Length: 105
Image (tube, rainbow, N blue to C red):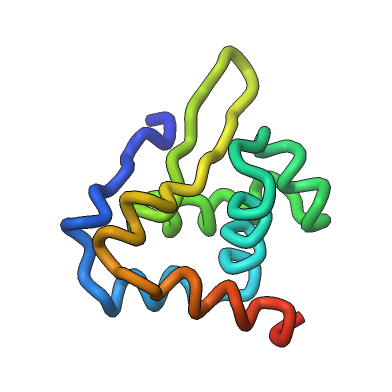
């Protein structure tokens, strides 16, 4: 099955959202998408120097926590940060986490 599942951020519990944001690679993906908007997944893999297989699990966690939406276009995939929806469910959380992103690198 292609990775189609996208959770509604309003249905995600806070511990799940925090867990999704606790991994450095997932946080880097969120940071890239927040800074650049929609991106092709291949560009994300190259920017973070990770393989598709290494990133696959992390994208699933981000989708299941309502943070990211992936879209298939032929053999390419794009990812978008669901900022507005996530902010509505967890006001201020993404801002607080991303404000400290540079300090974690």
